[in-house]
Length: 248
Ligand code: HEC
Ligand code: HEC
Image (cartoon, rainbow, N blue to C red):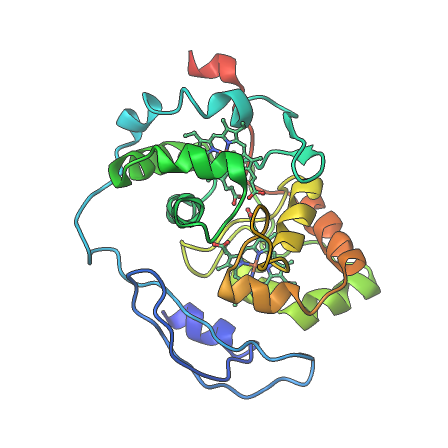
């Protein structure tokens, strides 16, 4: 929590109350830095490892549950063509809590991607925890720099405006909460599609209606989101595709 408080000094969180999944909600009031053009209407943090139930992910069991995933997430360079052509996200090395959260978001419809919705619907809570525990272990062993490389002036402005590193970490691979994603080194075309999807919450077949990232992404034009995606995708990260053959 200490680190979280510190990093929040860079974010403007101006109100309020919200219940996010089964989690506690932290409501914080902070001074508004002038660099932030828009106001984040809320910020919340899940702190709840052990409420709801006490299920725990088992990576070994997870390995037997990914047969359906590897056809897309286990092939280097595999592309999706909806809503445009982009590489499917790398999930090996992602934080397990984020993996579970995103799968739940497809289940509930907060994330509307049709294929992932039908995939996620077939998973139980225990399946999601096991699969997430399994993929989390695949973080590549590169030593990351503490800080991301300096961004060109224009991009640097955008990063400051969006306070991106205050949640995703100074190197974009150390999120301040395990339910937030690592984004450094993620495929650039996917990052761009993901960022755009947070702007689209009124569409029935595509988009993500996430309170936090919606507030962030809507401050930017698509051209700006593309510059952010290109810069973050070039940073060294821990995410990777572990090719299908290695599973066998
Ligand atoms: C037909 C291809 C396909 C299959 C099969 C598939 N996925 Fe996906 N997955 C995708 C695509 C495409 C996305 C990006 C969707 C979007 O834009 O939200 C995605 C997104 C995800 C995400 C969110 C990643 C992020 O960074 O937010 C997770 C987690 C995930 N998939 C896990 C799984 C798991 C676990 C399985 C197997 C049970 C699976 N997927 C099967 C194509 C697939
Ligand atoms: C207040 C905290 C916060 C800030 C500030 C923030 N993010 Fe996020 N970001 C999140 C959370 C939480 C998620 C997961 C949302 C979800 O579940 O879909 C996320 C998701 C993302 C994703 C999707 C990752 C994936 O694998 O699908 C991208 C890309 C992203 N953020 C980029 C950015 C960029 C670029 C900025 C700055 C312009 C930024 N974020 C600022 C908290 C934040």
